[in-house]
Length: 227
Image (cartoon, rainbow, N blue to C red; front, side, top):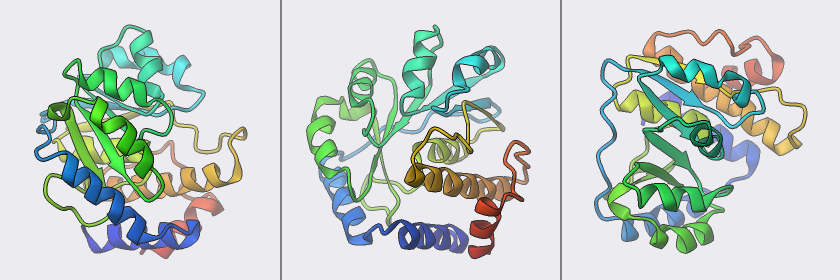
């Protein structure tokens, strides 16, 4: 993990009150359960579209026709597959649609399952229902055994980090509503940190994600904290 990614993780834990020990406990469960996850899909040379689960997703599905590969976060998976698109990777912490993760893994679709401090019971309930040959175990703590830390925070920005790790030539984004007025306050904070995480990734890749308003006070203040 780079120094800036580590600072990002530290500030997220501090603001949201996440105990790092709980992250490690959940990670260790995944390490015991998944002994060898599948390789990431090969996205080298590919235009990969990252599908967030925001309300704008349904209206932007047409952009998937030009995608070489599709990575979906959480419930975006259900919207995208219902529209007839085949996804290449689902990214989830199992808090919304765990049955989708289990079903896809058993259909030999890679599913990145994330361990964090407050989803250990979900992991215990749902990981055994998955085909572990198609589960990529992820953590936001130090990686151990088969569990990797690709970077990122929410399912959505972690999906982008995984696509980057898999060699994506370019990243596109649909279904991203960083200022969704319908979400609760804690979710809004998570979305702002997700934006910062993507700004970090874009900086590392030498790309600009113009749809993120980096001057917005809620994002700019957090960006400044990790510089």
